[in-house]
Amino acid sequence: MRRTALLLLLLAASLACAFTQNARAGGGNYTFVGGTPAERAQVVAALNASSFSWGLIPQTITVNIGPFGTSYASYGAVFLDASLLDSGEFSWGVVQHEFGHEVDFFLLDSAKRATLQQALGGKDWCYEVAGLQHADHACERFASELAWAYWPSPQNSMRPTSQDNEAGGMPPAAFRALLAQLIGAPNTVQQPTTVKAFAPATTSTAPAKPKAKPKRVK
Image 1 (cartoon, helix red, strand yellow):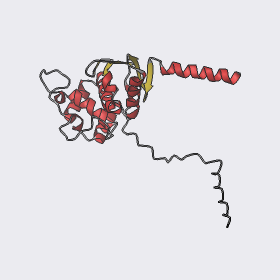
Image 2 (tube, one colour; image 1 turned 120 degrees about the vertical axis):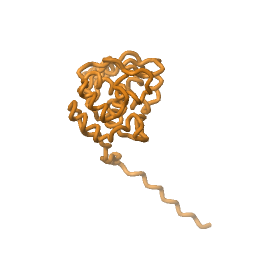
Image 3 (tube, helix red, strand yellow; image 1 turned 180 degrees about the vertical axis):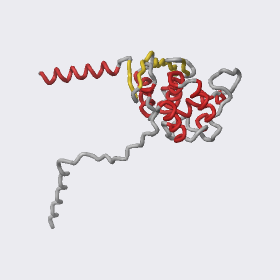
Image 4 (cartoon, helix red, strand yellow; image 1 turned 90 degrees about the vertical axis):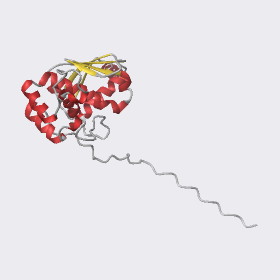
């Protein structure tokens, strides 16, 4: 009875954690508004896939999930389109991109932005000039580069195909080295697990096949 009560208590605690509004990943702090458990799980997975230390952001970020039609970020808040999160791993690069804007908002100053704009390119930093293309804004190039540099996976939707792409302004290693210098970000990426996993040893052998009965000669 005591063991059953303990199991029920642990189950209730894990269910409470599953539906909590607060979440952590890679040291980062954020809270959810809206979204299904599956959509929220995609956000957690996206941030965990990145090697960036989200805990550097000195603010709890509000992650809003809904039918926004697009995804965007503002100071202290990220807005993620629910249908994008429903696409699974394809959405992870966008999640990291929008959190990259929070890195900009909270950890960069004008001098650091000027250094990054010179390295990444762009015609302004972030929408100071009207009418520019998305990739012409250095803040967008920064967010895409951050997403790619710390999760250089073929599955990353921010993966550049040329130096003209938003995430192609700098080699990932050079970008990580620059952020390590500017804001103390980690200069490493997560490596895939190379440990072999095995099936458990069998505890019994398969039953032997019955011997065929000798045929009687009539």
